Structure formats: C-alpha cells, structure tokens
Image (tube, helix red, strand yellow):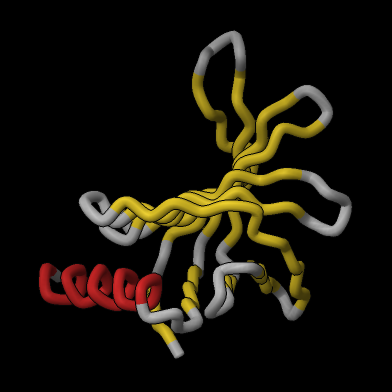
Length: 133
C-alpha cells in the first residue's frame, strides 16, 4: 500500500510540473450539503459509478465524465502544495458558476464544492487511480 501511495504521489507531482495531462479515476462518490445549524457536511446521496477527471496539459481545462456525459470547466486559478501534495483549483462551468476543487493525492480524494441557491454543496470522490499522458 505504501509503495502504491508513493507512486501515486510521484505521478501526481510529475504531471503538474512536466505539463502532462493528468487523469484521475473514481468509482465512488457522495453528494453533501453544509448544514449551517450542525456546522457540518451532511451526506445526501452516494453513487457507485465510474468517474473520470481530466486536467489539460496547460492547466486551462478540467473535464468531469460520468455515465458517458462530459462536463467541461475552465480553470481560473490553481495552486499546488508540494508538501501536502494537494492541488486546489478554482473552475467555472459554462454558466459561469464557480467551483472549488481540491485533489488530495495522499488521502486519495477529490472534492468539488459550490455555493448554489444559498447553500454549499460538495461532491466528494474517492480516487482509485491517477495517471498522466
């Protein structure tokens, strides 16, 4: 397990610095919303579906594909913390809705959060694979 984790972190880091396309795969996700009274995230639903995320070589586009449907996003900004191997993105969809994406290569999760209709929502994905092309 440690070898796979080290390998995953190395691929993740290399992809960001070598301008290679980063491909992330997941097979499980949760839909959450932030409960202001409880001050905690509440799980609303979960999905056991294969999902693929693609970050372009030049870090300008982010694609999210699930059930054969691909959503395209524009990367507005990004920051990579080498120490924690966490990549943070601010992205916009075609309707100009802003999402915050966090990709954690050590804990193997990807989260997408947005503030919509007065509520904070999150899609939380486990990461099963990180590769680059």
